[in-house]
Amino acid sequence: MIAFNNRSWLLHQPSFFLVGIPGLEESQHWIALPLCVLYLLALGGNVTILLVIWTDRSLHQPMYLFLAMLSGIDLVLASSTAPKTLAVLLVHAHEMGYTVCLIQMFFIHAFSSMESGVLVAMALDRYVAICHPLRHSTILHAGIIGHTGAAVLVRGFLLLLPFPVLLRRLTFCRTTVIGHAYCEHMAVVKLACSATTVNRAYGLVVALLVVGLDVLAIGVSYALILQAVLRLPGGEARLKAFSTCGSHICVILVFYVPGMFSFLTHRFGHHVPPHIHVLLATLYLLVPPALNPLIYGVKTRQIRQRVLRVFYVQG
Image 1: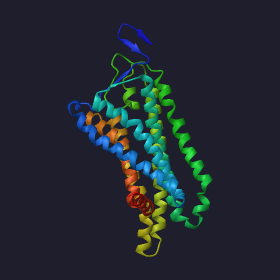
Image 2 (image 1 turned 135 degrees about the vertical axis):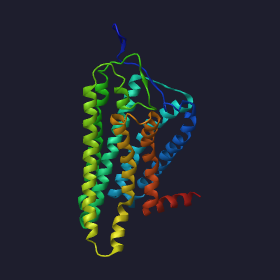
Image 3 (image 1 turned 45 degrees about the horizontal axis):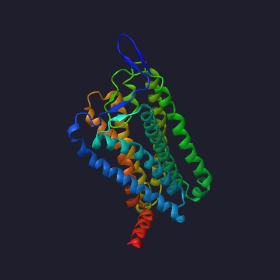
Image 4 (image 1 turned 30 degrees about the horizontal axis):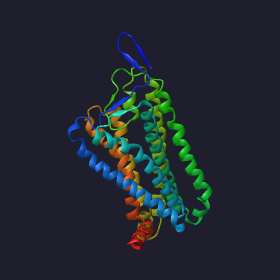
């Protein structure tokens, strides 16, 4: 629907033009190569983790079930971003329909929220395993794990569903060029001609609710874990307790550090070059899905042995 006034054309459901990496248009095909490698690693690694956990009943324990949830979310997150981004960078498929843009945006933000929720669940699992080891299987039984997964899923959908709903009430001017490689919420909001106060405020509230509360919960869990570990007698016992948290801490850093940078840059980093911001925002959605299986595969003995056994038998 298009309406005319004295100043400009106003578009209610425009097609968007994705620039890709602003300022690096001439070398975008070279940038696409490492992004393609990351996507392939994400696909191969997370499918392997899911198959290993699915087929090995000894891995049907809370830590590995949460890891399976993380791998499933990572597959959706990477697949929501990489195909269109690679199409923009490699074959210049810059145009994206309005509805498709909103769907991609919803999936990216909703599944990012779900990943954050699963990281909280994994931190709580580590807390129970170290601080209440004798009650671990009683506290985190199959029913609790299922309810936790459902709560993470529902929270992601309910919190992020207003994003596309609120965007549909906006009108856009003639300029519908998104200086990004995918449809990101704030990048689209900035193109609107109508008032965006509600969109910006809700986006900030969601970010504070998801990241703020989740990081707080993870921080409290690890503070209690640290307190319990320091009470253990002997350095070997402490080292073993810390090693059980090593993989999870690495995954937390890989997910939250670039995510916080991207969030802060959109709102306050006006002096950050656009190509740096877009590159980091794209890597934020591809690096965690690619690295998470490698981190757990290297640091978790049971998964490492199971994967090696599968490939050895096949070889």
